[in-house]
Image 1 (cartoon, rainbow, N blue to C red):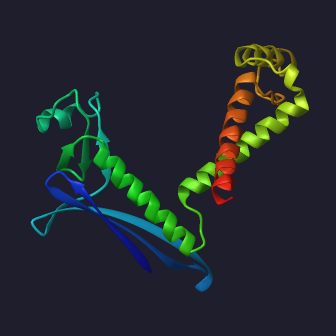
Image 2: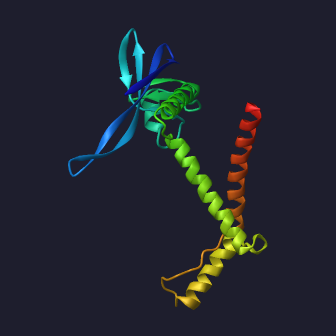
Image 3: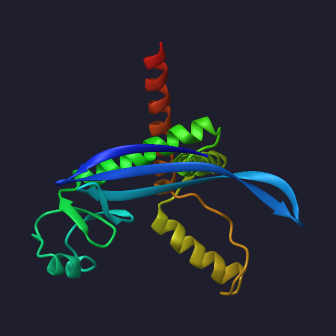
Length: 202
């Protein structure tokens, strides 16, 4: 087990941020079959040497969901705040952003040490994989033949009516122009990051 800690100023108090990674055995029929890495994070607000609040960090912005919190704590509805747990609130969203960034950085550091990927990295890989699949399907269909989302929606209705007699059944997959454009943006963003990383190391 290994823990990393960082302190972030929280108004007149301090937000103590802790991220811990540890291995757990995976059992099957009473036998250890594998190990899994568990990563946890904790945010505690410390004032006068005592923990006065702990919990998840949230950035508050006035809306229907947060109206009760703003009213209860006499907050300015035109401003944003950072909230930890149920009671600890400080001005601005910068503190919340700093805490979240600290958690992400420490998770990344621990993930590298334990040789696993962070949740953010896994999600990014899934998005990139989906984008690559969309581009590949679009190429098979012919980029010049792609239709808009609205056109595909109308085409699907006609296809179902004619081939499936209006009921459920097989409908060929069609990639829309919008899907293709979004996928190319995702991949372009990825290659831009890689390019800058390579230039940095060069």
